[in-house]
Image (cartoon, rainbow, N blue to C red; front, side):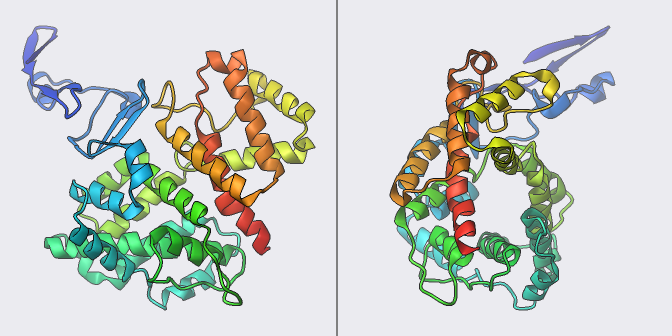
Length: 383
């Protein structure tokens, strides 16, 4: 028990120990007993629910899903195996996985009428806006999900549909943005391979999957599958608490993820790299000029892609992505000025005393290596 004294009132609060030994104090009775509430900007000190899904230790750079280290899952598991683990609490048996994979694979098609929605979007429509609205629209094609009282079979079916159709919607959004015909899902491919096929294949020729890129995408999906009670997760929970259907809640989560202080940080890095390139290319002289700008508080420029609100020493995901990025880049033998700029910035951030003192840990630049290879290069080749 924890004793709390406020003026003349003293109350006892229950202490709670988490799955990894973290300590918490249950303040549920605070207002009723004292009339006081707590104020915690950004929820830095507040846990809003009990959960055994993800453990994150920012000081030590630890990330675990259901007790499994992220390094092991990224190396040995498929994205759908990890999805099953997060949803149902344990890794699937062979039979469970086959049934789960079969269900997801056979729900990748979206209603043909939804193609008309894509036709109505401008070519330059932001993919996150398209994704959010299309996921929300799925509820109109499955009116059974509007009933808040559902059995587990219906809940599972909705989860499987959402996993399956989100990949198709994302890929078709990309195709729409470059004016290309959509590619229908291929049930013979695994989740990552199918996503790449829908994004980059053309009906005019055969598309050969690169195993290293498929593996890199699989790892990216695993590393981003869950990250505790972040902004988008909390948004989904808040919307879902009203008993809104899962598609509506997930759509709201995508909108939260869109922001540049959350998932939109990836876009901010790409835009920064492009701005640096447009200003003077990838020369060392130009990079040095921009590094000076990043150090100058009056310049209004920020070095995007380093540092993290939670991870204070290192992000365990960065090491995994760095390895995959190097493998992909080595295999494709690509040369691009944005990659060159990214690597020069990475070297500066990890060696310059200014950034070291500010704890600019190795973080998203390595993720951007893979992002540029998986997205920017195929897009340029298609154009």
